[in-house]
Amino acid sequence: MLLPTIHHSLNELIGVLRQLPDADYSKPCLQLSNATIGEHTRHIIEMYQCLLNQYDSGIVNYDLRKRDTRVQTQTQLAIMAIVGVLDSIDRPNKKLELQQRVDGEPIRIESNYFRELLYNLEHCIHHQALIKVALVGHNGLQVSDHFGVARSTIEYRNQCAQ
Image (cartoon, rainbow, N blue to C red; front, side, top):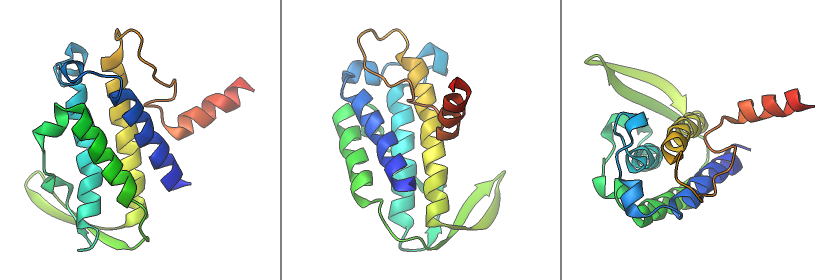
């Protein structure tokens, strides 16, 4: 169920991006401390890319993202990058070591590919919620009510509605 959910989430993001001109995609949003939809999208993409690019080594360090600013200004480039992620995400689970620096101190944590996919999905949904804030006022956009909402929240709301 994890991979189909990731595909659904990233395809929803593609659907939003296809509706945005580059000017709106890269326009600072006051409600997001002047961040842009493009910056949040690039961050989502590069987290997934980081995991995929470091999968073979078995060591994942999200601090080593590319930070390609073209992805945050060109919707078509972002869409192509998301499609690239979707095309290469289906891999076997395996042990990974997560490395990062926290307050200047190196940390190492045992993890695995599926756990990191789940982390990236939750991280993606969080940033989609921020993107949704930036979309307020963009009349005529087709955005799912579930865009940027965690699966557990959707399920909870469905239970409450019964």
